[in-house]
Structures are given as C-alpha cells and as structure tokens.
Amino acid sequence: MRLSGSITALATPFDVDGELDLDAWARFIDLQLDGGTEALVVAGSTGEAAALFDSEFDVLLRMAVERVGGRVPVIAGTGHSATAKTIEQTRRAAALGADAALVVTPAYVRPTQPGLVAHYRAVADDGALPILLYNVPGRTGVDMLPDTVAQLAGHPRIVGIKEASSEPQRMQALLAYRADDFVVLSGDDATACRAMLAGADGVISVASNVVPRAFRRLCELARNGKSDAASGWSSRMADIYAFLGVESNPIPVKALLARQQIGTGLRLPLLPLSAAHHDAAVAVAAAVRELELACDADVAG
Image 1 (tube, rainbow, N blue to C red):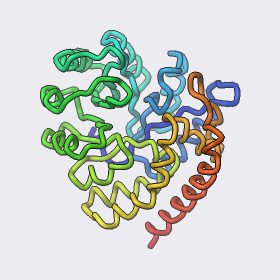
Image 2 (cartoon, rainbow, N blue to C red; image 1 turned 60 degrees about the horizontal axis):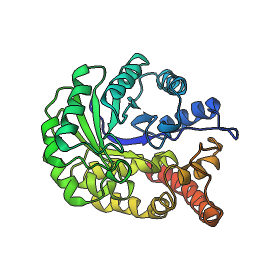
Image 3 (cartoon, helix red, strand yellow; image 1 turned 90 degrees about the vertical axis):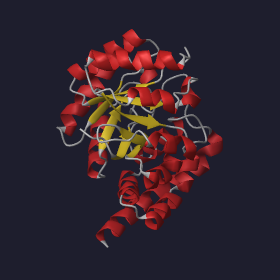
Image 4 (cartoon, rainbow, N blue to C red; image 1 turned 90 degrees about the horizontal axis):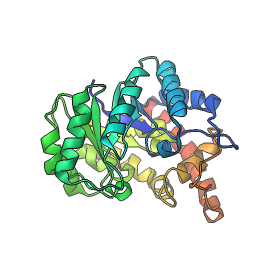
C-alpha cells in the first residue's frame, strides 16, 4: 500500500442532539468516493476523535470499511498521549479492518525527540497496522523534527508522514526521506499544491470534505508537474482555505457540510460557527458548489 493523492480527513456527522448521524455518514462516504477521493481518514482531529467514545469509534470505522469495500484505503486515527493507549487503539482499528493508522504526536505531554522515536517504534513494533506519522505542532505542543523522522523512516511498519507545517523548508527537509516505502503527505491545504509540486505524494485534507472533486483534480495536476494549472485550482480555493481557518477546525468545515445535509452538530467544548461568520459561510458554500461543477466541466473538456 502506497498512500497518495487526495486523502480526506473526514468530519464526523452528528445530529442536532449530538449523536452519531449514521445515515449522513453513509451518504458522506459515498459522496467522497464519487468525488474521487483516494483514501479516507476516520476519527482524526477533524473527526473530533477526542469526543468519540470507543463504541462510536468502532461503529464509524466498521461502517466505513464496509461501505468502502476495499475501493480506497481506510486510515484510522489512533494516536493518544500515552504509548500503551495508542497501541491498544491501533490494535482495535486493525481488528475493525482499517488499512493503516494515522498516529499523531502525543499531545500535551511534550515528549523529547528521543521520546518520540521510542513512542513510534513501540507502536510500529507491535505490528497491528502500517503507521503514518503525524506532526501538527500547533495542536499538540510538540514538533517532530526532520532528524527524528529520519530515524523512523526506515522502519518497515512506518509508511510515511503527514506534516502539517506550512513552512517550505520543513517540507523540503522531509522530502529527502521520501522513498518507495515512505511517503510524504502535506497536512496543510493552503500549501499542499506547493508541497506536491516539490515532490510530496499527496495531502490529507480538510477542504476535500466539501470539494472532493476539485481537490482530486488539484492533486492530479500537481503530482503530474502541471504547475500553472495546479496553482490555478489552488488559487480558486483560496477563499475556502481562509474560511476553514476562521475558527478552530472542524467548526467551519462542519458549517459547510451542514449546508450539504451532512450532519448539523458538534460536541462540546466546540460550539457552532459564530454568527459573525455566517455571511462568509453562505458565500463560501456557493463557491464550493461552483468549484465542484467547474471541476466536472474541466475534466470533461
């Protein structure tokens, strides 16, 4: 398995009472597959993993695996702040049929760089699933440095990294470790085009929740080295990128998904999108519809 292209970090649909909306979940997965998404992440940070009970994690992942039916890889978010809990959750995901695990750096505890190496090696050595490293220092409070990634990239069960830093120097440093058995994926929508044009294998995206066709097209163009066309598509999505950052993820993207009848609720401590951003949500939702239609026309042309 080599992960690449447009990979969606799925939001988790809740109903107005905050319960899982499994009908919406099924429709959402179908929409992603129809849009050409090349892999799906279940219960990542965009999926409000910290707010899910174990039984809900099980239901969401099992249903995704069954619904996808092997058409694309299903990746489970299994990272916890403790290594033993991460191993347990990764085993759980394997038993439910996941193809790989996305393991974020341990949040809040702020391990040292040697501690990160020991953590990831322990999870990978357990062997339950292939592991994707995930570095997002803005959320976790710890930054996994490129030298640390270099120590992990050769492990046979560590298959790549999702890097959420937007700095081009960081992505360039990580691309030095890219190999047939180790992929480098962007975790930042706004700079994903630049990263792929520089050699990254793809992106784990928030924006592709609402523009799966457009993001798949962007990835195809960028990975084929079509710089002008790819950059053009990325520029057309600039307002979407900006809107998705007006409040903490996944608040803005769920406001857009609600307009597509994909879930309506969040779980505390997250609150719905502030009224100050409602007009922007209306405008961006219209832009989303236009982009998806334009993508169909572009591909057909």
